[in-house]
Length: 445
Image (tube, rainbow, N blue to C red):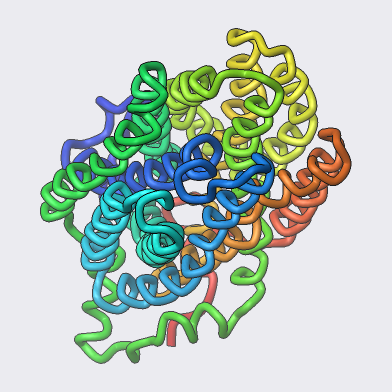
């Protein structure tokens, strides 16, 4: 494993420059993934119901908007398998370059779609079309990014390295919510007509920056060694998908492990925004609260990842799942106060503590569940299928439950069931120890 020399236990300055460049190149794609999805989630809650799904009943427009949010997840598993194959067969870098360009184009295109008042039904159709394409490219992003970063990490610091990807998610949260908050605090007519489009068009700029950073990435020593064994004929070339499914236990459990992490942000931040607006809170309060969450996420993710190195990935993730369920009701109680400071506190309590802890741990843990020849594919399957089944439909499910029962308790029960599934799966998964001579999970023939 590269860079196995002794390093201080935590701190970005302790990470060698080459590894920092690798982390930055991977994290900017993660930032774009979360930027695209947080931005769409925010717009789904307060913009798209009026711009693309206008009607007399606000709750119907919100349901339709969150449904368009959900369909973006349908192609994520396809993208996960497709770009997982590319990453395991041809290299993590190639997969990362393709996905980041695709994400940037699709998100920017959404910002150019005319409203339903201008072109009628073609507007929501175009929105859903680009949303699904966005999901395809996003589906291939996290697997190669997490794999590359964790493969570079020295033993005992994989949790920290993997968690640094989630600092990119924090930046995405901060920038997307900050832009929407600033633009939304001005004239309503400007924001609903042109203002909301600016953050979507900005995704094209981020894509250019990401391409420049990723052009300098190098494959990890572990992947290079595996490629050399194939070229020398020592081992046969493996089909990554077949290898991931040949021992299906971890592949299936990875899906359930990812479920609690997948719903956390979308329940607390996305549905939570729609919930607090329905209670009479101004949308910009939620926007700025999400920005605060993003700022805290930048600093908390490395801390949670470092703690997972000390406590153990499995134990830390299970604890985070339990805390998520326990803090969800207090978070929504704070949302109901209609006081900005209390609402922001609720977002911190409901997401920064348990949600970021789960996010910061999950990606490293998934990479430790698969060997090098199928790692990107395995991570993508677990992460993307769980995000599709969990996160993608979470705002829609929560909105429907709240509309049907008129209170927040069915949402709490829904989250608890998801968390229990994640806890059980985590307890039974096979995870490679984070040690220098840990070896493989499966024999390579």
